[in-house]
Image (cartoon, rainbow, N blue to C red; front, side, top):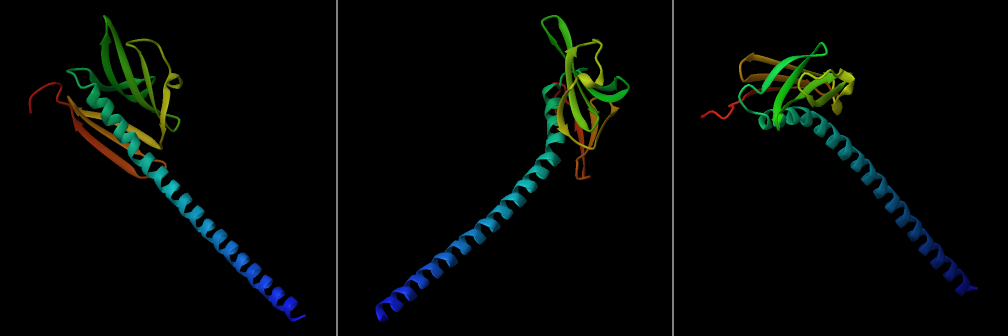
Length: 161
């Protein structure tokens, strides 16, 4: 009888330790899951905050040649135009804001396209372009969280510093 009681107490102690360990593991997993979610949300916000302005600045720097970059109207909307020539055919890369998205349309210069024809690049609240003087561009982008980033960029167009 004594052996049975001791065996039962030992079994109960082992089961109790097992359940305590299992509950501890589940608790740690829940904490790690919450931590991962926070990091993922933070990373997503950081991505959307920086990507819009970074994308536009890289497109401007890449298209920097004399007279190739300018602000104008595309289908009634303020847009940034970056002109290039392939072979003998002139093309335009048009960057604009439409229906909550930064969009880009690459087409033959002067072709008849609409705002909906462009490729969606990144979701954002607002984007505006201005060119207060030749080769000086002001870009403002408001991300989904409401933070507005500004870019003032002067294109050298191959000139010297």
